[in-house]
Image 1 (tube, rainbow, N blue to C red):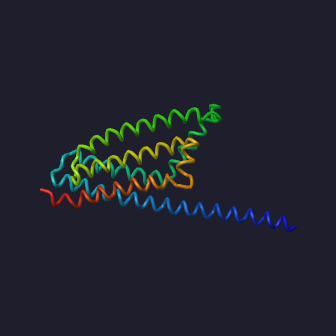
Image 2: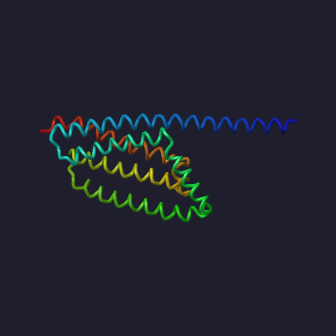
Image 3: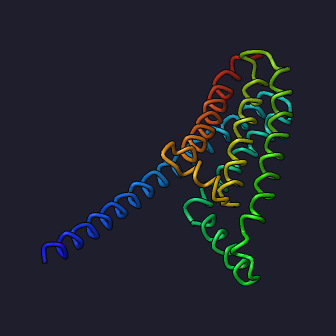
Length: 201
C-alpha cells in the first residue's frame, strides 16, 4: 500500500513538473512574441526615418524587410505553424516508410542550412568590416548579421535534427539565447539608427 502511494505521488509530482514547464515555456513564448512586435515597430520606425531623411533606398528596404520578418515570426510563434510543419514532415516520412531513417535526411539538410548561413554571415561580415564605427551603415550591417543568425536558428529548429535539438533545447537553452539575443541586437540597432538619423545631415 505504501509503495503504491509513493508511486502515485511520484507520478503526480512528474505531472506537476511537466505542467509547470509547459506553463513556463508558454510564458516565455508569449514574452518572445511581444518582443517580436516591439522590434517590428522599431524597424518600421528606422525604415520610415531612413526614407524621410533621404538615406539610400537599401537602408529603407532592409529595415522594412526586417519588420516584415518579425511579423512573420510573430505569426509563426503564436499560431504554432512551426510545430505543425514539423508534424506534417514527420507524417510524410512515415507515409513513405522513411521515418526511421530521418537522420539520414536531416543530416544533409542541417549541413546545407549551416553552410548557407555561414556563407551569408561571411558576406555580411565583409560588408560590416568596410563600415565605420558608429556609422549608420554599421548599424544596418550588424542588424543584418543578427538576422542571419535568427533565420539560421529557425531553419535548424524546423529540420529538427536530434543532435541539434539536444544543443538548442538542452540545459544551456541556446534556442532562447540565440533567438532573444539576435532579436534584441536588431531592435537596438533599429532604435539607435532612428534616434541618430535626425541629427545627421
